[in-house]
Length: 239
Image (cartoon, rainbow, N blue to C red; front, top):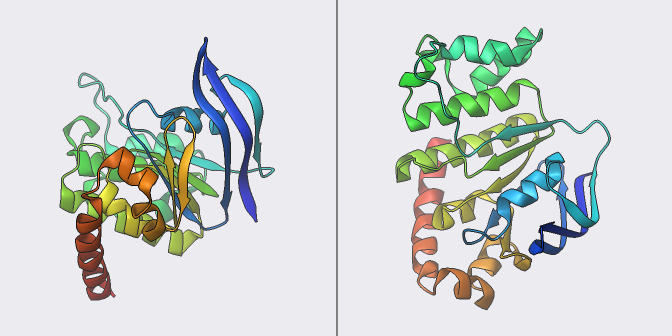
């Protein structure tokens, strides 16, 4: 079933076109990654989906009663405001204790529940934000460069976690990423964006396309192949 259907979307800020002729669909349980240079309209696309971008023409259609979980690029924690991880998550919980328990188990933050939010490492904070997004039992997760600031092992761990979540909840995932070499093997489909869709398809076909190489350089294939080999090896050893 289609969760999100975007048709001929155009977004402008003043006279500046940011997105042109965007067509995109997201199906149940699918992991789709958006890649593109800075200023290519990636975050604007997310804003169009959640209803905060100035759409000039075109349409964003969400399945009725679609529940969206959103993980922002970063969250600025007020150092002077003491709040534990547990309290931060319970504020989002409303009354569904089961949903909170499930989110904690899926993401694995039980060990840091008593920590102060302001003392978390980048990886810990991302896990907490992911758990918070899952409490609402979303049909789709929007991840906006959710691995910003993490080191390479942290990034790989995060994407494995996203794949686990998809397997356990059948939640679709639409994510913006700059982790080109890592994200490829974590995605069913990759969309290369630069104000418009330059290329899209299976990770292999996008990585070898001239449009992708024009945006990101021609050295990506080797690193991609190397990472994929490592990922496949580590993935099998996890099972």
